[in-house]
Length: 213
Length: 213
DNA sequence: GATATAATTTTTAGTGACTAAACTTTCTTA
DNA sequence: TAAGAAAGTTTAGTCACTAAAAATTATATC
Image (tube, rainbow over all chains, first blue to last red; front, side, top):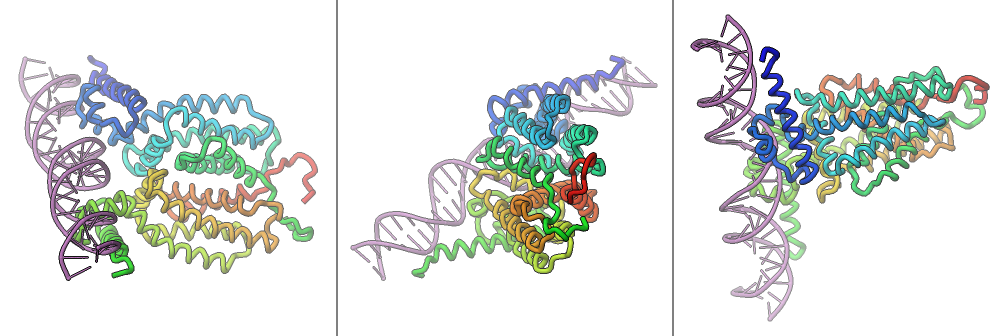
């Protein structure tokens, strides 16, 4: 009891809440589950859940965060065994993210996650999503640096900037994929690949003398 | 009365609701205004507002839609008087969007707009935002085609695809700008410009014969 | 021009997320 | 072990949103 029973209890409660929330969300769907019912099953009051997580959507966000451990594992596996072409690697990055998302939650629920992450821009609970983003950019940076090191990418390019751009490009395509019920994983893949094609294409003018660059 | 009094009434009501909502949101802030109070001032029941617009956020979305007429005007002005460098034009495109957004609503409120637009992925009310997106892509496409026509961009490039990519890149930067209270317009501009720099940079490996351009 | 009917709005009653504040329980520490 | 601090719970309330019954009101028909 010297080592902070209070902290331990807090952790236990938090775990209990998340555990109940996970199974209920999965079985009954996010909308159908009430905070009150989670509180009842976790044997505490609803207000306690609000004190811990702020909002219902935040509870969901916390669960997503846990699942991201697995996502990052999968992405690391990719960086450990990179394809020959950089474009393929980046496209694969996007595919892994989408596929992971779809095996974990329905699009409808993902929309709640994204909406919540936006609304929380400034709140005390709003750090979760940003952290994940940062971790993913790190993976993308690693990937880009690999190709630059092996000479598949010009050295003058700022790898970090390119990684950031590529990551955000993938991000918006993910948003659009989640937002559109009619877009399947394959179509999203196509679209992202088109972006990559454009980004990596040579865009310099083709009229011969236009050539100071 | 032969020509549809009912339709006329519906339009009148809709206008009245939007008018009241606009001024109240502007004066008191989105959160502080209740649907009930809008209904009272517009002299109809709250349920009618729900029948017309579905949700409070949708009401806001509808107002944003109206403001977009002005946005598109400004963007057209840009396409009518393009700078020499394509990158400058695209960066300007982003600047106009951000500036327009900031003169119209606070970031906090914009977050509500974005969150709502995501949540509405499939609903009957969910068309608004998509329409705007489409209109903006058209403007961007015009812009890209101009530069391609004047020879500042390789002809082999698919202008539509490039426009789409550039637009979505701007879109995600706009999202991130809105999501972060600490990011001002100048910083957002810098970040987007960095993206553009990366997108338009020559990325071909530097090892061998790189004189062919 | 009165009237049935079809469209639309309002009323009513309720659910559920969320909040503030008073109150109670429980851990800690002296 | 008792005072004090740090939770958690209760209570009372606001507000967005919904379904369904009840009341209006435009329209078409005779």
